[in-house]
Length: 546
Image (cartoon, rainbow, N blue to C red):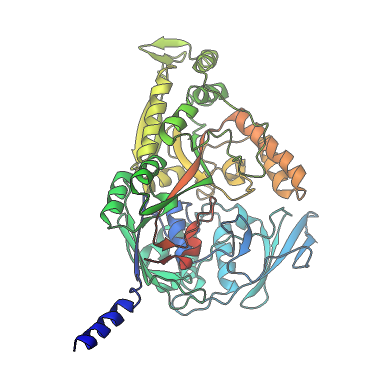
């Protein structure tokens, strides 16, 4: 009997540990909408990447790859061809073949879904985040369910990229056709986000409680690599201090690095818990900045904008809050990007020069410690940012104090991320708005700087040029840069973009972020990218190894 019990005991301890079926994640923002073409919130992208995929994307090694297509188009292989357009200009046509995919309700993903998505993007009242990419498509030819040819109205250096997210035509087309102007508020992604027909990725949404949690389960129609977790629970914890407490209590396994702990938290967290967590500090193409509302009469004079930037000690902020890990930004182009120009103008902290510029701009009179204009109006402006991010709120308070030293009153307003995003989309901010952009390698910043990208009621609030910056020379440089196939010549055009940017300062550069990924040691397969395409695009590779 003893021998039998011993054998049973040895057999039991030899059994492999049970697989972890559920992974509890957290992030600090709640998506305003789940529709992939409406708004440009990072929180939405992190979830969308789990349930669907763009046609192409940049991988963690910053290489452009196919996710839905079979191969990238190529001029050399004749799967991309230069063509003459009816207006006499030159365009390019590119061939794509999709991998066979199926929406979660069993309907195949086809080229007709892409055609419908393009129709939505082109419509002036659809409310897409940026319509420019859709408008450039002058022809879309369907060869069969999986093959199509796209013709665009210009030849660009990144012609082989097609990073569109696809809408399910069988669900969304009847809603869109009924009333395009109201589509953004009636989309299935918001009225019925658990509809399986919205997903063709490794997961589908089975529960969505706005501002609280999003629950995902395996999508049985997914044909790619089988995910290691059957269920994902994504908690929305907007306060970063509360997020850290949830990690330590074990109620959260992993906070998504792109929207997780702040850098200062991660630095302290690593010192205390490095035995249980691996902390990866990923330098990224994430640009922390302050948009300037150029309609504000106090901010129209660029001397004022120069003065505000010189009155902010950005290096001291970086050293104190981030241990110098987040480098001060000179412009919106990161030094990590091949298109960065070493000759970009740099603004040092110089409150004396800032005061002189403010005097010259008509704010020489000081009354009760604050500057006034010739009409006696106090130089008082507001900076809006996202609530719950402790570091961002601290930065705003430091800037408030530093601007006071040169006679500018700055009021700080923190809003929930969803409300903040909606206000930006409609340019509904008083003076300054502090947040971050994330870009792809060598991305031309057209959507944020071109005059055609200013959101208005007329264009359905499409575009991301929230300051309403308009400079014909910048428009020309942006248009030329994306058309230039020669890399060296293109680098010169990017240098011009950076020169104009730092001269005009429609946006005040702060830092290039380093995203801290605080990864529990058993969680494997998470690969930070440092650019627009987030780590969740490869969620099926994540696994738990105790």
